[in-house]
Image (cartoon, rainbow over all chains, first blue to last red; front, top):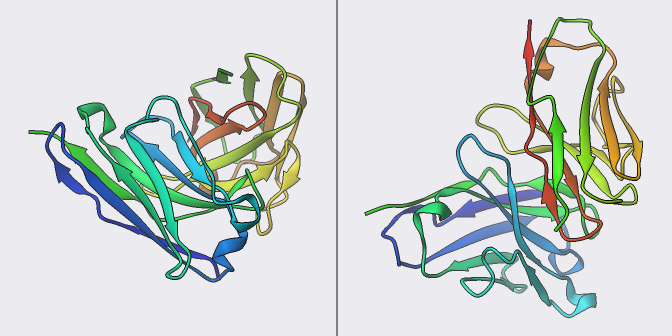
Length: 120
Length: 106
């Protein structure tokens, strides 16, 4: 059974940094792209970016809205996905989800999400 | 960037109704579109992928159709457990979610 479990959310001050983690299990981690998506309360989800699989060199793509501030990485020995967020702003307040696609794009499996609140 | 516009924003329907939700892309997305259901307090759940493919375990009352810029999610007979917000998501050029349609019971 595919399982994804995010952690690391909480309250952070504007301008601060935070690293989110996503523990993956139930599948061969290196075979799959992995995604981060966020959703402000009461709003639609927003795609943040993804990191490709082993066959595609673990390269990354980012939403222009976060490119340069957010970094996606993975530890394939621990089946962990990470989202490093720097220079956080109030508008980054949201629930952050990791997701695994069916193959490359369709987001078939989601974690339960972790809430990040950026406020002084 | 491709914009995805869902309509209506809110839809009220009765149990047993046939319900149609729409999603319009700002340009041709070549059927590269999924539909997700999100119940209150839960993560989104995949219903339909690549326009018309039913995800494993999803009831057959859900179906998808469309091409070009116009796509539709249909629920053939609305059930109480279908109350949720529904999002379309394109991955033809970039990756974009629609604004959602909130489905309520009348």
